Every structure is written in structure tokens, then in C-alpha cells.
Image 1: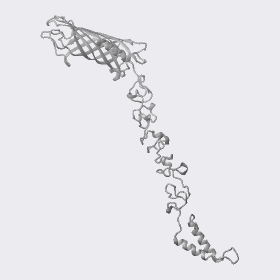
Image 2 (image 1 turned 45 degrees about the vertical axis):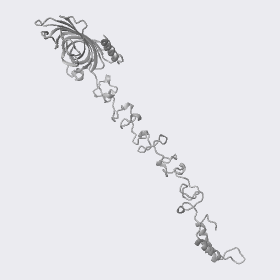
Image 3 (image 1 turned 120 degrees about the horizontal axis):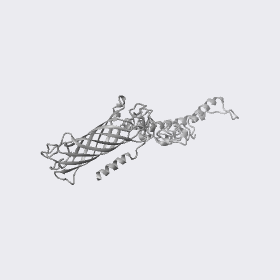
Image 4 (image 1 turned 30 degrees about the vertical axis):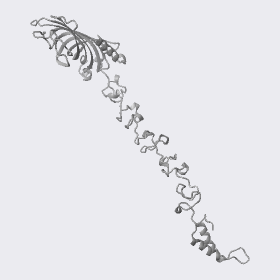
Length: 404
């Protein structure tokens, strides 16, 4: 009983969040027919082929036009053949099964709208209760594995005539069908089988005009997913994304992909990050160089606030108004970071420091000074001294910081 209750709860949980479709999804199935139990039998005990009788009742729910589940129960009356030793056994079964609508999978609707074929399979609980020649009151509890096919003929939008051929195999069958002999029920034994053949009726429930068994789904975009189950019915897509496309194949559906034509990362909403700095290429001013968000993805090697691509001195910090290079305080054209005399102008050849006049230069100046002549009684120079004064001035200009 616990196993039956568990099956009911599982069936209910699967169908609890069902979304309403434009076709009916529920149906009730009743069937009756013949059966043939295979071994195990005690010597001298066997049944007719086929034997009467067996029956079943089930409830089926189709999640879409192709796949569904059903919970069903079955009963078999297993009795001896006329030439066999007499015995009688009652067999009960309940199973939770998956259902495949082969008609819709294989597009039967291209050639018929009255014939269909379902396949089903699952597992459940069985109870074998021999009644005579001994009464096996406690019953033989087993697990069952069931597979089968159900042809359907549509009688109306509410009823279908069905046939069914099912094979039921048993795990843990410990007593023969007649109840007189113990068996090794461990594992799956292909001989512990019961074959059922039946005819029946399926009654379709719901307010819509047609059931999923016969629904001719529309697939506008041709992606193999019916519009009723297609989240993007007008765009060719993938079943993995409920019919929506993933153009760049990055595993992110286009509707949630900020870069739908270029493969990217889920963390960046489908956009690539070539330099791996955590900034999507589309937002990265330096997509091939690792940088920071503060600099829009660009590097600033010297940390001076001027990104490398705009920094004339990318490895040495400097103010932005000097293009990222250090200042030139003394204005001598030698930047402070290499200027050994940053506050005193000097040539680059002397590392920015002023050059002192040599002994030879001082001697030349002294010689020039001795030859300067003034006009008598006047503060003017002789004409002969003008060229000497010009030569001295040139020397002074070469040593602007020198004290002569």
C-alpha cells in the first residue's frame, strides 16, 4: 500500500505545475483481455495460451503532444489449463509509466487522422496471491518492469478504441504462479514474465476540442518544436532553449545575450572578454590589454591616472597636463625624473645641470678683458673692442649660471 501511495504522490507532483494548453491533456483508460504467464510453474502446472482474463484501469496525463505519464492498475486471474493440475492465482499490479506518442513523433498525421500509436514503459509494485491448491495469504510482493504498445483508433474527439500488448517482468518473485514452489527472485529474470493483450477504450477529459493524442501541432519556424511548446515560435531555435535560438552557440539564449552574434561568457551576459580583465569587449576601450573598470578596461602601468595609450611616459608617473610625463621645473627640456639639477637649468648632455666654464675659457675671457679699450675721456669703446665684446657675450651665453 505504501508503494501505491508513493506512486500517487509522485504522479501528482509531476502534474501539479501543469500549464494549460490549447488541447486536452487528461484521459482515463479501461481495458480487458487475455494474458500468458511465463515460468515459473511447478511441474505439472501450466495455463492456456492465451488465458482469460485480465483487466486494467489507468489515468494518463500528456505533458505535451509527444510525451506524457500514466498511473495504472491491473488485475489478472491466472488459472490452470484443462490438462494441468488445478490451481488458481490472483495477481494485482500498479505502475507509474512514461508515455511516448509515436504518432506525433513520427508524423502519422501526414497520412492519417484516425490511427495512432503509443509506447509506454515504467515500473511499479505487484502482488501474486495463489489461492489453490494452497492459499498463500500473505502474497508474494514483487517489483514490476512494464513495457508495451497501444494502437489507437479515434472514434470521436472524446473516445478512442485501443488495443494494448504489454510485457511485465518481475524482480524478487519468490513463489511460482501456482504457489507450490519457491523461486530465486533475486535480480531481473527474463523468465518471470507476464504478457497481457487487451482491447479497451480511452476517454478524453477537458474543455478543449481535441486531445494531445490527436493534436496536429503547428511549427511555424520549422525547428521541430510545436508552437504550443515553443518559447520563440517565429524564430528557429533549439529544444534545449524551448525553441529559442542561441546564434553564437555560447549556451546563452539570444534573448538574454547582450552579444548574440559573438560567443561570450555567462558572467558577462554572453559577451566576450578577450583580455580577461572582467570587462566585456564591447565596453572595453582597450579590449586586448588587461585594465581596470576605473579606466574603462585600459591599463595605467605607472598609476598616474593617465592610461598607457594616452601616456607619453607610461612607466613613469607624471601629471595629465604633461601627458603623463614628469614635470620640467627649470624649463631646460630635461624632465625632472632624469634631471640631476631640477631647479637649475642645464643641458641634457650634463643631465640638466649647468656647465662651469673651463680653465681655458676663463683664460680666454681674461685675455679679452685686457684688450678692451675706451675712447679717451668717454664711456664708449674703441671700435677695435666691439668684436671682442661680442666674443665675450657669446661665452657668457654658453654659461648662463656661471659666476665670472
